[in-house]
Length: 208
Image (cartoon, rainbow, N blue to C red; front, side, top):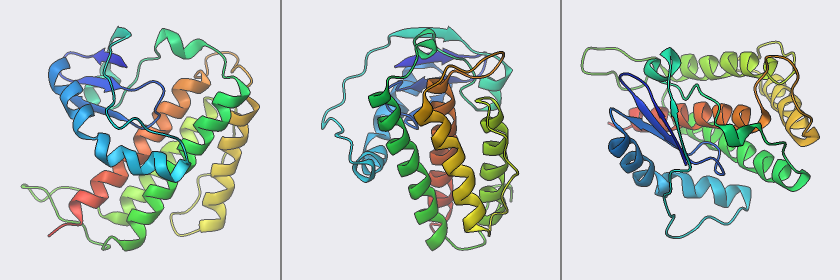
């Protein structure tokens, strides 16, 4: 895993398991949170038909300094290992896991109430607003790997499917991203994290 430490927030992210990334105030808490979410991440791997270890081992392979994005609440630093090109087999595996993350979000939103439980101060977006946020963010993320997308409406499944297919085609092609774009490994990790983070948020906030 890579540990990304900002001034106020620390992320622990499993580099080979896109979407499995959690945060806390310090490294120990972030690793503990990552371990606690193994049971929630495992169904994603089953949907992707990718074998997930029954007892995952946690080893920090890299520590990176975070930035304002980290403290805002997103894993924002590329690990050195993520600059390595994807092999064809790795690209297929990453695409399978990314599709499973999307399927998880779709399944959660299909059964969640439109109005989600609010926070202790009455804050928090409702289901459709969260989904629209995820789709808008993905349109921005896609540009970092050379994919130009029009943001799909949250209630347009055909447009959503087309946008996702464009992203997966870029990952499957496994071509290095030129200029100031994101390496594909990091792009998939960031997209998958964002999808699952909000899927789990909707799931948690759907409970009475």
